[in-house]
Image (cartoon, rainbow, N blue to C red; front, side, top):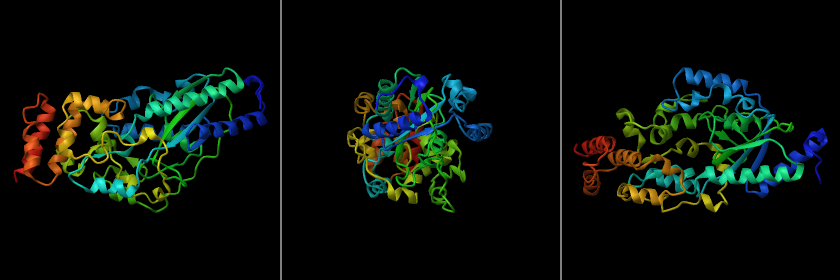
Length: 359
């Protein structure tokens, strides 16, 4: 239907527009679109308590923008509604993910990072959705975010009905599990919000029990300083020695708490070719990836979220995983070849790993 200018939109027209948005979103490859209002008062309180306990570790950006993170109108003045979207990314059946995790010779990369950088994929689709809306109703204020600014994406998605925040602090959808990305459009349209999702974790504590580093310190509370995803991606310095043996073969991120979640029996494989594994990262061995020089690393992670890690921390992480691998002459040889690496960070972790294999 032809839309009048947005100033003239009536409540029935806004409801019809919301239905169109959800249909357009599915046509663009999103599995679900929801609408949230901007009241994040409860999330703001939880965030402030989390920051006060310093559980953000080195992620100073979590506090840098003050209340802009929890008050959308302060980040983008004029924001009245948030269009929240989710897109499935699981590239293979969970049995295959489990097999990679339990093989100590293989390098485990979190499944969201195997393919093309999700920031680029979702941002492009969300822009197209925002522009399609603009073509229908005329100019309006909007801005797209994909993990790229101080945005409380999970509380917003929860308010938009896309799922609930589980005990592991990831978003869970009752019909689709948790293997999906989130993105948002902040806009100045008074769209009718969806019903917030209800929590369905119940008495389950599978994610708490399975966490290798006990990072889920209580239901719905994650200490990032202990989290493998934080340690292998966000943390820049040496990985604390007591935690290194617990990293197993994780070299980029961690999916353990998702693999054990009962709701992920409903997860669906992605239809997006961009999220399919590149350069054999889903089956690569630690030895193979440890052999990449910086030029190879940059070439094979081009267009990937992994590239932001940098070659130095890539080697740091793999050195730890090799320290946890079964002792073989091949493992020792690979580590010895990096003993004179220019980076003190790499040398220290290589030395630790070799000491593990010396008995």
